[in-house]
Length: 166
Length: 253
Image 1: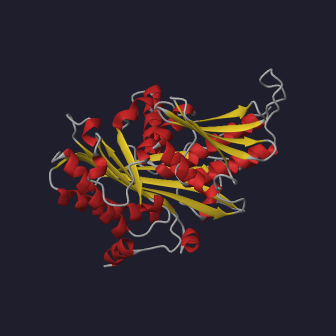
Image 2: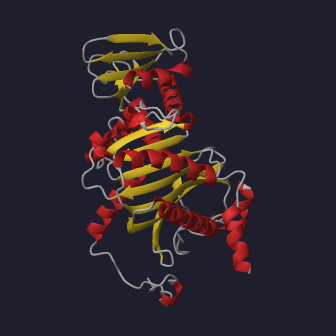
Image 3: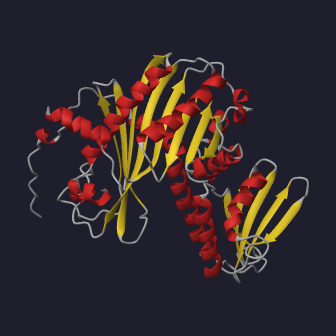
């Protein structure tokens, strides 16, 4: 196979002048970049919410591909209804600057989205058959369960979560 | 004369469909003795309309970061508190090492951003006292929604990764960071540019995250802070204009 001639090296193509190199090592630079990016992400509410939502949707995608009996007790995997309803509520809550703590499949057949603080927990369960509930409980065993659409309107869910966790 | 006109235009220029998703004023102080306890009753000094409840949500935001890939922020939990106001469009962070004020979309004007930040900064000052300011930053996170199909990124942006002509000319994503000293201002620009999931199927979305800052300061007077911010704001406009083309100007005008 004939050798492919390389184009001549053109240093003049590198426009910005490099007066000094401040990168002691690749590893250190990688670590600095990561830390810098984390600081930037945390400083920006827009980026935190945007990337948080991307992570959450990634979690939904992973959960949606689970198989039947994923918990070895015969649980159904989340279906398209539950995924769609979860995605919609996540987007709505992101608009109110609320991101979930964790997203897990529900043994009842559906998806649970958790929001947690030190002493209180809220989760929204989207069932395969289409209904959604808002569950709030604390470490003392006090709990409240509301059906979204019947006991509480969808538009009021974000405010209720903030009030409860706050 | 031409330069003066250009600078004057930059100072006053306003795009009706500005792609600004968030504008952040960041002021850091020298804080050897500050702790979270200084901020525990911070709501007392906050202007009307800012809710304490978002202290919790600050934890939630971090929780997400901890739970996701980006876990290194776990030890930063005790840095301070965030409060939300302005009908969910204003976020202010009171931290032991400084203050940050964000305006989320829709962006209004520089004057409104600065004035709101000034009011909140005074509240922060009441809590932390006369500590010297060591770093001042101005950051604008823009999201350009470029209509598909795009023949060439160069039609819209002037800072982009150049793909060698010997490589396939397909680009599924990129993340680019440049650090450019602003020597005349004694400042630094860190510009992050990345493709992000599009806001609708008919566009490609590019985040243009412009952060200009001065550090190594020791400012005692608040007037100096706002003078520095005015200079950084003008520079930020210059940088933004330097990153876009007339096609993009048309899109956002």
